Length: 321
Image 1 (cartoon, rainbow, N blue to C red):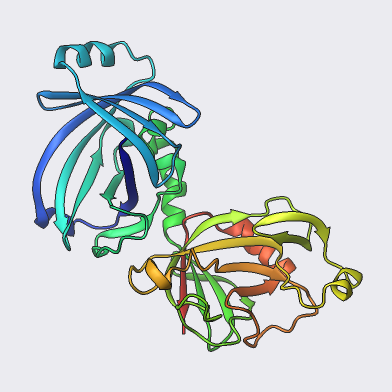
Image 2: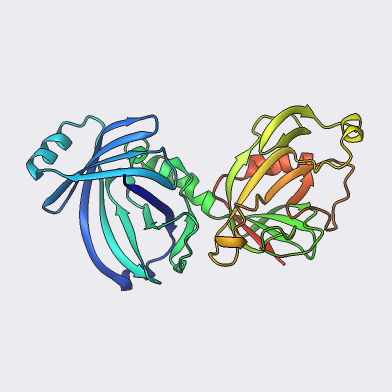
């Protein structure tokens, strides 16, 4: 059984070109893309292969790959009505890992993406200065989808998202939203009562660079109660609060955060994602502007709903402590 553990990042500058060890031109197309499975034919130079993946558009998938005759590959690709993905792949070594950087062509021109294969999802690695936003959770950036929805159709929006950032100040108990360096909006928050910190079980709020891994609660009613990131069917009210005086209320919307700095807030005992650190709504009776949470970032329900509509999965979140 083959396992692929791969993370994808956008490339933000050309500094990687000084580190290129090798390169090759690739042409590929898909014989099948159904549900969580795909079958791909790829030609690179004089080599061709058939690749089968199962597991959907996720970091970890089953992968099987077999060499096939070049003539067969050309014949298969020539008959594909959906079209091909054309790109040049550059191999770059950084910090003990080999990265693949894909410079896309044709309808996907302008897109440069870096991929790194790991032994486990929490394996630490050095983040190069040319690696920007992680897009492992964004289906638009997967090759299988770049055929039907190429980069030229949505790159303006992609650029806008890349320039958007949430900055959370723990000393000031404030969340600020920036777009293209301009302050758009500010909200009061409440962070961990135990102060800043990254250790699992500490009840502290992690610092450093993060991404929004997943937005949860689209179209849920204001005050909707969540447990385990799923709506319980309840809507917060005083009577419900009185019946559950010890409950840590997670309401309205959830932003599940993932750390972007291996060794600081990603991997091992300091992994923000596995600590289940969220930005979420809290009862309006709860005071904000002071640390009172169990480690998450609490917001007013109206504020977290407003923020939910302004940001996207993958956006940067910088927590300053």
